[in-house]
Image 1: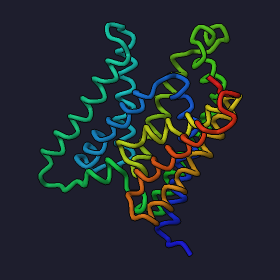
Image 2: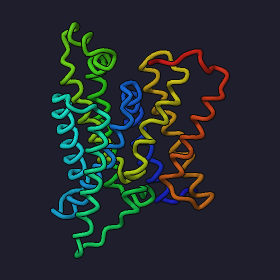
Image 3: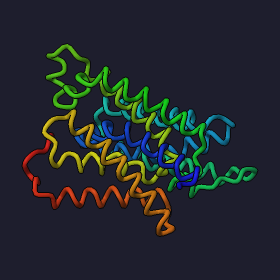
Image 4: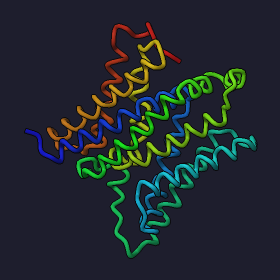
Amino acid sequence: MLDDFFTRALVAGIGIALCVGPLGCFVVWRRMAYYGDTMAHSALLGVTLSFLFEMSLSIGVFAIALLVSLILMGLQRNRSLPTDSLLGILSHSSLAIGLVLVAFMTNLRVDLDSYLFGDILAVSKTDIAVIYAGAVVIIAILVVMWQKLLVATLSEDLALVEGFRPDQSKLVFMVLMAAVVAIAIKIVGILLITALLIIPAASARRFCRTPEMMAVCASMFGSIAVAMGLFGSLEFDTPSGPSIVVAAMLIFGVTLMAPWKGEGGWK
């Protein structure tokens, strides 16, 4: 019989994996892994401001992640610096500002470890409700916008020919990424969110022949990683967030050695 806290953690983790899987596929297809890091690092600034202004943690993180995304879009139009340089500047600047603000918050005690590495075993029923509500909204938007997002990912010129607006698709993608970071921060933490985005998607990419199948498999691999990581954490008394990422890494290793290697792979 599983304890209530473990069951809540498992349910919450699977909820995150369901929506992170398809989004992670777009991160892999667009070769935007560093963008995921930028969103994750900006989350610390969102956490700090949430405490400072006594507002909801999810709202604060979402607002800052979205603001950083909009700043990135504006700077990309200038084209004076390559995107990877802009991501590096925004990523480390937002992280540094968050850490500096924490130092000034002498009247509050902030447990940075729980936000850096996650504390999935402490999730409440309210957290689960927020996670699944967010997951339903994110998946619904992905279903509605799937074709537009996919075409814009393949080629912005092709999207224009098809009558789609690439900038609109990019904005939707960034909003969804900000939402995922906001609801996932308590599960795996700021430093490991990107791993949960990329590793299951990379595992699925090894053998899936269609983008839709890759999205489904990424969610499945993410859910398996959550279950393996939590049971491993319980068995070996290791941190839950890092254990989930290690489990995802092991799954990726298995796909690398699998006999179907090289037969598929949607790009």
